Image (cartoon, rainbow, N blue to C red; front, side):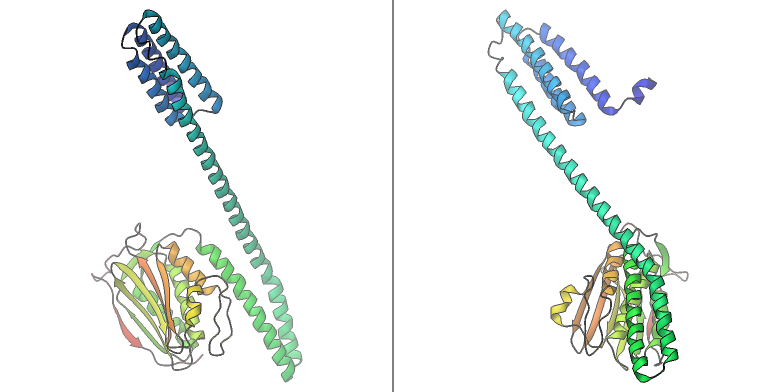
Length: 368
């Protein structure tokens, strides 16, 4: 019994089919005049067991030849006895039918094997890209730090206007390289799986607003009535920081930046809107693609990775990210997250019962 349990399922299927076929061969010998009943049982069982086991080509040909030879011999004996002389043509017919079926199964196996090989190759290329990005981003940190130190040293030793201007450009470009390397690492990290946690969406929006409040003189507003949810809090916080950073960059003192959270059609909707420069309509379809930058009202281009990070984070959570904008009127980025996708964003009651609400607040202006 233990030996049978240790056999693979395909071996058991094959043994069972052999026993069943031999029993039907014996039946064919003794059922004079009704040989075609067990005959068809044998061929049907051959197709059935082949579907569950899928033998190699040599095994398939051996089984096919054996069945054709044995059943053909028994039917030939029936002809000699003077019964069913017209049934012999079924031997090549059934053989041809099974051969065609086996050929198609073999072609499907080849297609599946090719698809698996392509998937494995793509996975290898993806892992190689991730490894290269991690190594490159890590190795860039040291030369950036050294170059920045020397630029600061030159700036301190020669505080004339020309040197200050030149070193400011150098430091700005070094900062840009640093941001690119950090965001490349962030993209890789957010593409990995995440562990959901219970968090208060309203508190997250409020905390994000308060963190950015001192950095720019804007009309800051936050409004949320979502409550607590189960999801990727740290990653959503990264996405919100990225959107607020863009909003600050493309607005001027006095412009409004608003963070809003609400439940809409069963989904959690997070929005970051501003009344800044806006994005040209012809660039809107490309804003979530890597290295797509937008220059508006004299603002310099960024890394082109911020909105890509936002898109990846939201898609990893099963949601969508959209953007609407009008030049001169502002931009709104909407993150829609499903609240019932495999318990990633499942609403729960707050400690006081129901869901939490943050009333709209307009914070006083502050400069950095």
